[in-house]
Image 1 (cartoon, rainbow, N blue to C red):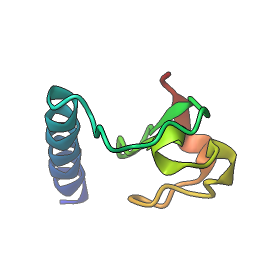
Image 2: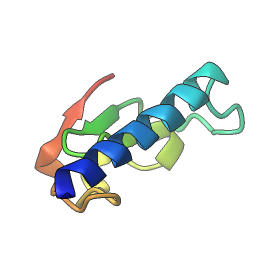
Image 3: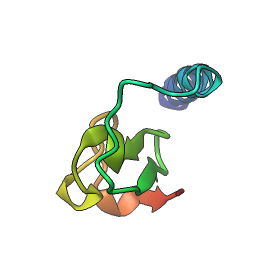
Length: 76
């Protein structure tokens, strides 16, 4: 049952990501000049340094699935 819930969660996240990308992202997000974008390998959560206004190194764990920072991969 856990894997079914995980798959449903991943599908929902993907839909939201696709929706945001199709809208061109959030035009009201200030560019903080940090630039890195990281994705959680477990749940797909995206951490964008510019949108968050802080560097990735300040993230201790995924706010969605709570895995450690080492489970993230840089995608941009």
